[in-house]
Length: 394
Image (cartoon, rainbow, N blue to C red; front, side, top):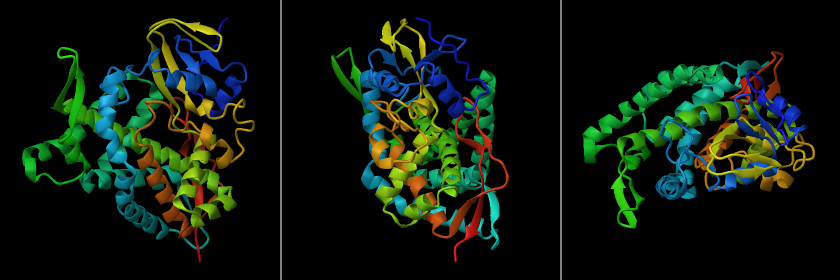
């Protein structure tokens, strides 16, 4: 059985995979990478941690680029940063950041309404400000981080390895510029999640003593974790904001539910809108042994791409992928992945997105814009430019 060929290069992920998935839940790119398009197949790969390894990057990726006991050890010390009580304590800070940005935006909005790009004007700026406020980073980094987001986005779309390497190294240098002063201050360093991370002790398996050894995080591990928390999250929050506001511009009833509902209700609405148009496109794996998937035999050492955008629209699970139903679809939603490598930052992303929408919708109505938006192309999803019109609420 031969898998159909699927070349996503230059294609908009949502439409392209809708068309491809109708042929088969599993495809193969011209370079030999297996692309998992179906929902049950995505779950099978993501939850088979023995057959599909997450150690696929040439860069250190802590924790989700690790497997087994090593992955579990690093998740054990990083997941508490996203615990529910910590997110509750962070909410007033994030809400203040959102309220200030919304006030800045609305100062330029006339009574007849003003068009903005939801990705650039709201999503990107809010992501940078919320993340730096959470981590205790200097506000002066905002222009550099915003420019880095643009450069990283362009490098990702180019698929040029030298460009992606350059922007990755530039971000690591930025992180070290934040870590180094704290290292020098020692016990006098500011008390924030960045400093707290630098003091973490991780308990790792040690085969030499048939047990485990506890040690401080190494510099490169701290940088990798902070890169994961910030570099990965900044662009994602911006893209999610574009998806959400574009959808809400055509859904006044949902907008009202977000305005007046509870945080839990708002989070469910956000998750379902992101399922319909998932900007978290894919994650990579590599097989550790021969496996069978969707009737195909995959050899050991082969590259596999879990395509979340496609899996979240699989008609075998979601009869009408575009139908909004957060109650019926919630349990099958794979926006943040599934299994041991589920996105650790989901609680923070949910907090940021819900708060940003609540603060904006408290003072503004969102309408479709006459300007046509621009969709992203692989390997990125969602909207590159998401024009919407804001009008002040009376």
